[in-house]
Image 1 (cartoon, rainbow, N blue to C red):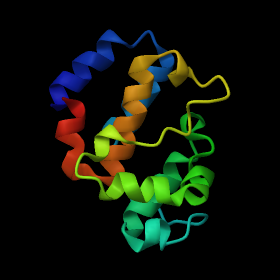
Image 2 (image 1 turned 90 degrees about the vertical axis):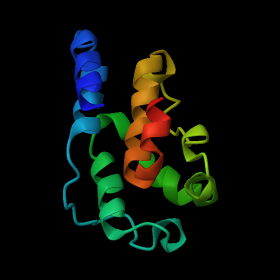
Image 3 (image 1 turned 45 degrees about the horizontal axis):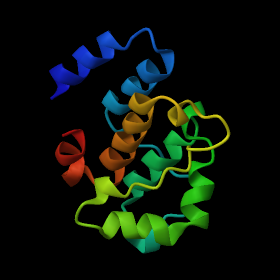
Image 4 (image 1 turned 30 degrees about the vertical axis):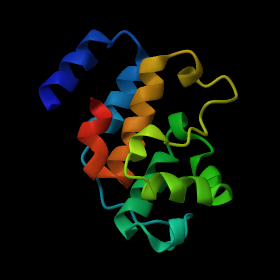
Length: 129
């Protein structure tokens, strides 16, 4: 899978947004200590490292407003998390304000994959297909 993703990244390397999103997706999980998001996010369903990874995403220009959306629309995120096919109902708060994902399907899909990788890694292979 990693080889396929790297090939896709090379093919799309002229698209700076997609290249940056590929880098975020392929980056190994770091141990980011949550400072903003509450540890009991999504009604306590996710781990501290998942909260930290989500918060780390909010520091990138590609996921502006993510932390606010998760907290304001928590039920929507819990529904996605609890769904057997979580990859099919990922909330997309970035689909506004002229975000590149509105016109770039690859960027939109990469953002969904990044969220799935963090919240539901068990569904990542299904989401990639």
